[in-house]
Amino acid sequence: MIIPEEAAKKIDDIYKSLVFANQKDHEIWFEYVFLSWQWWFCVIFTIIPWVLWWKCRKKESTNRLLYGAFFIMLISMFFDSFGAELGFWDYRYEPVPFLPSFTPWDLSLLPVIFLVLVQIKPNISPILKAIFYSVLSSFIGEPFFEWLGFYKSINWTFLFSLPIHFLIFLIGYSLVTSKNFEELKPK
Image (cartoon, rainbow, N blue to C red; front, side, top):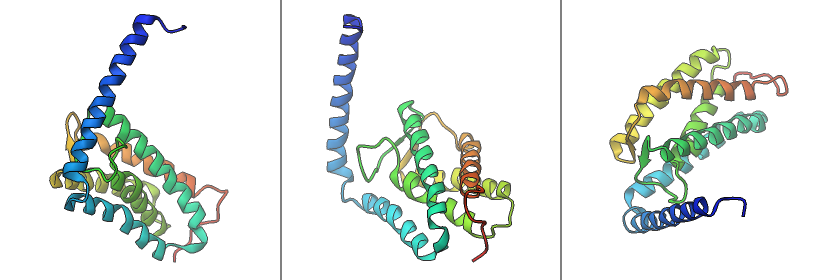
């Protein structure tokens, strides 16, 4: 065996502890979260923004815009999972208990807000849009979900999120406005 026996045993013990903790977490989820009003709220916040965007989107730009939205989802889930794993925050009412990220936020609200901001007023500076996006996400969205009890900040402050959301928006914006796509035009 390439891994030393002692290290392998420690890894196995920790893994067993994690599996046990996850099983207990899933039991709590099924007993207290699944089908609660909070669960339904999360499901609605995951689906409705996409339905509204789908009806109002600029149809000829759908693929280009979804490219940016998928980037926002991927990087948001990565950072969200990373932060939860490091103990910076925790979620209490996940729609799906198997992901260490908050689905309505990472897979719906953040990307759809991004899409709306990219589509409206395409001549406004992306820096201004990134500022608006990061302030909205960091100082309205995160505190709102914490106030509802869905999110618990443990070793994190909303101010830390501001530059992260700012950069995520700008990178996503540069992806969708790349010269490989058609130019953005007002609706």
